[in-house]
Image (tube, rainbow, N blue to C red):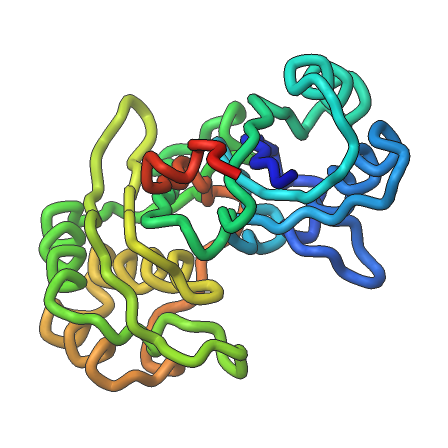
Length: 250
């Protein structure tokens, strides 16, 4: 049987989602907990690969097992077994071809900015002291809809076959003391959101113009884009699937 796990985590203490030889990952701690509770080695496949320090308010992963279990009971046991910074929201039986990564139709991220020193957001938001022109940043964000190739925002030397992404939402909004950038797309490249945010901040700080922002995208050159902002302020907030994904039809 194949199952989807819905989960969330604070990424502060992890070197990203994916297993690594010499660093702790979210995938590793969940696999160890699942393998212990199911009493058989269990591998999970995530909907994506968040970088070191990045958080997830909603993430999905799938695993296969022949072990029969009660989903509610296993969810409770996992939450008791896992560290406090990883939580399981549910476990769902799905059809055997369902895939947490390839079946996802969109992912949504938020990036949190504070413009004044705030002790309650030291580890959860990125501090920018200088004034930002949010209107210009939103005009630049709208330019993203006019393009499909985002190689300029991708980490170099990745194993992807295409840099084409369909961006469905990109907007800056002030929410209380937080300035939040929300971006949704069918897929994201490695480091893409943090590079986009860094380049949009350059627009907001007056370091580059709207035309220069457009030319950076056209250039397909990562060296032309802005610095990647810290991972601690980035949140994967939603992963969506077709409704039939969660229909267990064998």
